Length: 401
Picture (cartoon, rainbow, N blue to C red):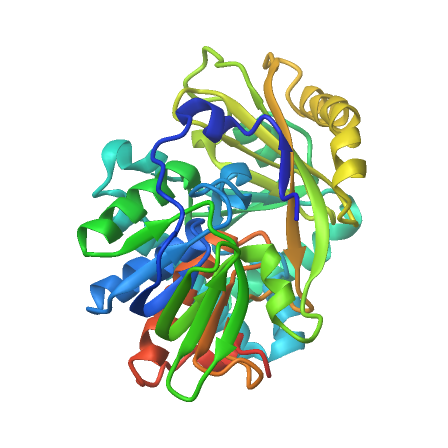
């Protein structure tokens, strides 16, 4: 699957940070992880911490799939609003999902704190504005539900407040205290470095073609006929994981993003908060450590690499126009433009855990706009399940929910 195209900012900024050999020999480990993006790296890190021997495999170079194209907004707000999620999965499960995402942001911050330049991690407030007046009642309902159950510290901004603090016109919005941004590409490379220090082996340019499940383990066979014997397998290859699941659990989409040249103002809007809207699909904005502006969105409800790639020029113009209408006083000249694939699920939640068809195998599928925070949760849940421990929240994200 062609997961991205164009010029992803973080990949071009940092380049190929590390490279690893392809697997050319038979080997074994306690646990094999397919996928060396951020999901696989987080899972491998937790498993290495737990004392397991881990081998990581990826058909590309490390972090060169969706991770390289990630816009890396870290939000506890799931794509499905809390009041809608409660109707789909029950109030307690919905509240748990939101609270766990707040904890995930904090956990990611602690990990990033041990890395060079904090892997671009910065805590940010998150502002969701009503795209249209007709969205205000539901947004108000969302605010009241979060306040009632103490989900973050949230504040209502009316039209005047939005204009004063953010400088653009919107009917109303919710300003939330808990959010962050990071450089997922650099973070993943640093996390894999830490895994290797704990003994993990890493092989890229290695395509797994066959999985053989046994009573006491799994055998992986690569296209070069190398074999990996493991007691457990973790599948964390993101949107390409669908081939390992015998039923449809995801819907593929195409999304687009731009990054500007650096701008002079230190604060472009209220504390350089993350910005997004209630429309579906939504437009979102953040800044970068070198004072660039990222704007993304204009998603298409399809996955087709050729159509997506041809659309980049048109999507670039539309996103530039959206920004100019929101912030006519801030210059925006595109420096990087790219497109990528993302997936949605029936309720906006990830799929974490196992399926009967693939014994001794666990999936870390952080689909949706919260892919990074979901991947953090998946790493904790899978580590507990492999250790034969109960995880009190595993059922919330299971395949049979």
